Length: 249
Ligand code: ZN
Image (cartoon, rainbow, N blue to C red; front, side, top):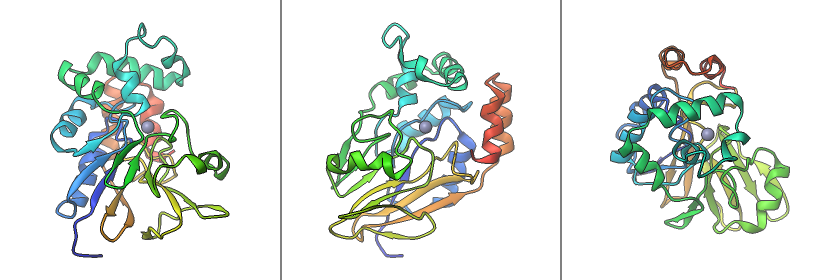
């Protein structure tokens, strides 16, 4: 696309090492630095290898709701885990036991979004709430007046795409296309989920962002779903968390 190197934008890796490795292999040599939008852990069977990779290679990151849940005790946050689905709750308890002290400390130190970075913002859920889902146009309407910058990267929904907030109307962004950031519009860009896509495409999702050209390119990478699912089952995590990886739902 251009001569400058893009940033690799990742979100919702969710302890899926096979998906992460496939993305890194597909993107190898193309990017300048790695930015992450939270949820390194939860659901998947490899929280420690994923966090160890993040500690070494990620330039800037914010926390996600699963990162927070995975490190807090029920004493500190008695109600948080109650808002989770049964499968998410089971995986959170498993993750708390599995994390090493050093990896837990990395997650504890992650900042909460919105995190301004080089003229754009990083958030996990919505600007106001890392647990809030931006899925529909109606979800985005209340956010319109709260965006700090023209370009915001977000995650949490595990759906690649996002939203274009033009002066009068809001529209979905088509992840099939290269996205040029135009003046006078606001953009909420979701790279999709590396480790547990829910947009009907089981391939790992990610994006590149060219800061000089102000362009986004959505990407997918096929990975070894069989292996990731087998690890989830072997760990004794809910079977649903393995099965959904094959469907991308
Ligand atoms: Zn997530």
